[in-house]
Amino acid sequence: MKYLIKKLCTLIITLFILSLLAFSAFSIIGDPAASMLGTNATPEQVAQLRHELGFDRPLLVQYGDWLSGFLRGDMGTSYSYSLPVSGMVLEKLPTTFVLTLMALALNVAAAIPLGIAAARYAGGLFDRVVTVLNQVIMSIPPFFTGILLTCLFGLVFRLFTPGAFVSYAENPWGFLGYLFFPALSIAAPRTAMTVKLLRSSILEQLGQDYIRTAYSRGSSRTMALWGHALRNALIPVITFTAVSVAEMVAGSIVVEQVFSVPGIGRLLLASISSRDFPVVQAIVVILALWVAAVNLLADVLYQYADPRIRLS
Amino acid sequence: MTAEPILEVRDLCAGYRTRGRAGRDRQVLDHVSFTIHSGEALGLVGESGCGKSTLARTILGMQAGYTGLVCHNSQRPQMVFQDPFSALNPARTVGWILEEPLRIAGQSSRAERRRRVDELLEQVGLSPAYAARRPHELSGGQRQRVCIASALIVRPRLVIADEPVSALDVTIQAQILQLLADLRQEYQLSYLFISHDLNVVYQLCDRVIVMKEGRIVEENTVDEIFDHPRHPYTRQLLEAAE
Image (cartoon, rainbow over all chains, first blue to last red; front, side, top):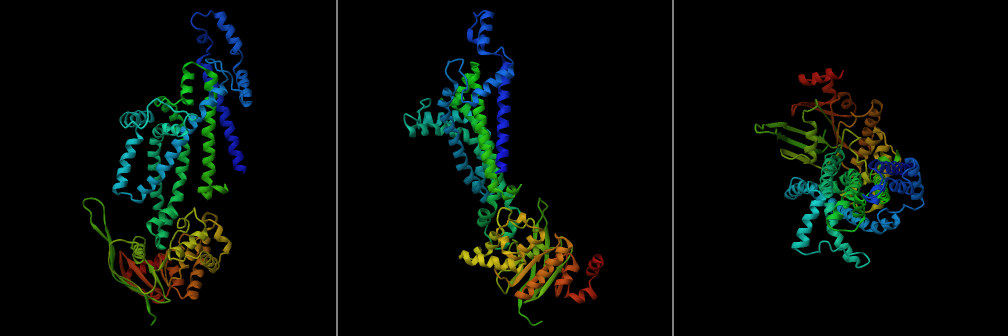
């Protein structure tokens, strides 16, 4: 419990520093007042708008203003659309959330059985095929996998119509079906890495002395793997999967473009190019919160997998 | 001694090919023959790398590629290993580890397995409460007691102990040796006791075989070996021990 509180404090500090960094990064790039008014604006008009938007105040005051608003649920107003940011973000968030969750589910559901099977039959034909495929998949970035999947399953096999996004309100199953291929593109490289890690982790555990003890007691290879090695071998995999979630959140931003998924990633990219600072700031903090929460969950899981950690 | 033989090893040879194109066969065991009788403790001494551990593995059937005969006149022998820190799975409780040989042997009643675990823990001088602990919570001596309990839980008649005390402090060594001696009395156990330390062998064993480069160079009772060593290698070992 004490451990959890400590972790939560770290999480809050992380988010605080991150939002401050995002805030300063944007102020270095320059405020959007000039671009909002267009090329014909006089310096007086720009100064007037800067004053209205509060850009003439010290940076820390601006940040404090933003922070107190954010904590009350007010994320400011979009410069481009003049809409409240919270509404815009909350509308897009569930799609990206489902997309990433689906990628995570695919990642775990594929990596664990494949990693176990590759380790169980290490050196065999299956293991060698998996190893080669792993190397290939690992080296293809998600956006390119996305393009390949669109060509193959969208245009050749016609399993989905590229670009024809189905919203959840329209058809829940169609929505999940459309997100399947984007999720697959995001999950593929991380899954290949997880399989490789799990395989080598299991083989490392199978070489330990306690496995030799188990064999001497009459244990079979299968029993040694499931009863002894697997649990210890999963510990590094949990840590890696938490990192994978961060990677997959980042991957979703790009892949949403490829598959025309109207998620938070598309909104983020559009807002960056239009210098719609309040939207960018809100999305960055929300994504960071998400990744940090997953890492916290991994820390908790980690303790269940490795009892030696629980005491410290 | 007229007791029945419990393990007979005849002309055992084992080896492996060194890697590479010029791979040569390296003979690890060279026509090893000996017998252990019921209730007897046989010491096996020799320097490291002389094939002691390979011999133990071969007797347990954990070594591929050997010729010769290993004849058990009882059920499968059990083994106690050298390093109690790495020999126990860190993720499992002591109780789970102790139950494992019973599960493998097909003892399906959980209550019966639990009862045996409690019984064995007391036999090796630990409280049954230790069943819920994990190996990292135990000291080296306590872990080695757990290892001994897990070897004895299926009631073997022969226990092979491969350097069971060499990883422990001297005071703990004495306690573990005493425990092995007590258990031998109680269960009429036979031991194959592998060690490089002649003093340890002297305390526990009846007979000793001396091994050098995969071959048995001398075999005799413990008193004869210590008082009248015949082979120069045995003398060398004895001098080194003093």
